[in-house]
Length: 182
Image (tube, rainbow, N blue to C red):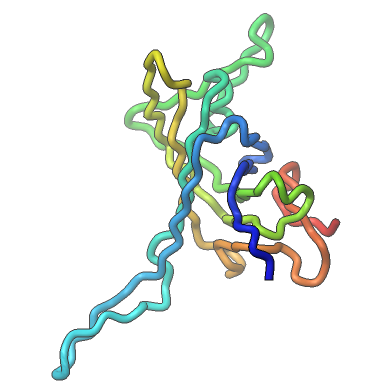
């Protein structure tokens, strides 16, 4: 048994983009089965429900520019042109319907290199549209991002912790947003 514990630099693949560890402040996940109370003549018991109640990942993204928000919200991004080519903006509108596409999300330990051995993968994630920005003199501009796991259309697992391919060495390719064999 290996006594090395997991931890350290992690990167996040989302919307066919790779957010490097240098732009990630902290990552936390919560995957919790729901519970139900059963009341009997012998007392009240709490039991697992057999259904996922909470499935989400939250991370802090340090923003190198407002344009970088396109990584989180590509459906709300408008690219500039002419002198503004390579720049753009994310637009949020009151009272409208925002069309946000779901996306796979993969959290990967940088030290694992080209291996998905310790990855956490959300097959069908929905990014919560939220821009809680805080400007101050001591911290870089950052935004807290929450991704909620959604059911998959084909019934495959919504969340995976560990290797992507059970028979061959594999890694997660952020350009295709899929596990590929090494």
